[in-house]
Length: 205
Length: 205
DNA sequence: TGTACATCAGTGAACGCGCGTTCACTGATGTAC
DNA sequence: TGTACATCAGTGAACGCGCGTTCACTGATGTAC
Figure 1 (tube, rainbow over the protein chains, first blue to last red):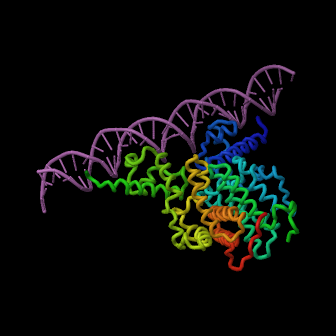
Figure 2: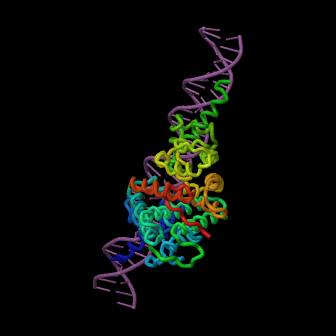
Figure 3: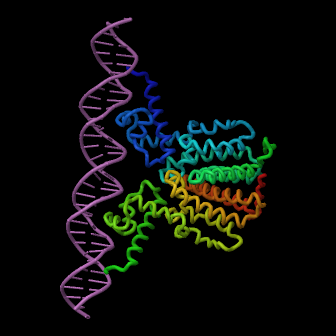
């Protein structure tokens, strides 16, 4: 048996990863197989020994796009500790950070591709929903709001983070974009009860 | 002179309007001239007596996309009075309304096409910026926040409205989408001080 | 260790379809008489 | 009012390019001896 079994797995991952980065940058529609394969260090023809068709790849990428932790590299820079009590604050800071704003290729797909998902099928939408729900639940746990409001506030905080980033990226003026990001961050933190001045979050509910 | 001068203007408007609706639904990339011309009640060949090229149309549509009041039909249903003191409240209710959620074709382009704009050139981005600024300024005028916070809060409110709609549209489950819309509406109204018995969010530094 | 071989990963030319663009033509319109 | 005409809006066939897909081939790899 020439080539170990791990070889195919590795190459397939490379292709998926290349597709993911290209999708984040150019959207689902405007990416060709040539580009994807080039990004994986291969040529056009090889594609079909790994995938049945382009939509097959499409489905495969979508499956892990929203769930794989790979795209969360932007978060790592800000060191989000999912078990800490101040997660909410850290998540918001990381999500609305300059790093996340600039690193389009490794961006959270909810920021880079929400309208592409809207135009896609149920599979993509369900994946999107799952990741959004996960983000909301992380935020909800560490929020300072009263019982009934907590869920609503967490949902709004997530929508605000995503919306702020989406709008900031659609702007031409970089200063306006930074300004918006910061405004969203301040308001989102205030919504959670994490005021700027306090380095640490107050007691969490 | 066969055909009055007004004829060309009317037909051109029809083409632009058809393009606008199709862009809102399918994004900039996945719309063909055939579709656009069919939407205008014409056939392929006629296009080039009105526009030099597809990108020419593209530019023309973008120019008025964000500034023409035509796409604001969704707002009309809720009767936003731009001169009233309660504009902010009305704008938020209209923007996050079911009508706006459902009427994709006549949707605000900031909801339907933000990532497409991100991938476009400076022209599109500047147009986007202008409309966003207009929305912020309308909100800012009627906000109950203290001086320094007003602008930041208005920016966040706009981002929250857009983000809420963008995310809601990317969901598969309609109830989850409605739920999110309502949560965003409640929080956005609270941020402006227009809460119906909802607690006010704390302000930032 | 070195050599021949079987296997299969990857190549790149070729095909066909969709779509932007062109162009010779058709036919609808307003005007002249 | 009715008819012939000039103009130009709109048509649809044709062309070429890009891209998804196919396929015969090349060559890199691990194994057998």
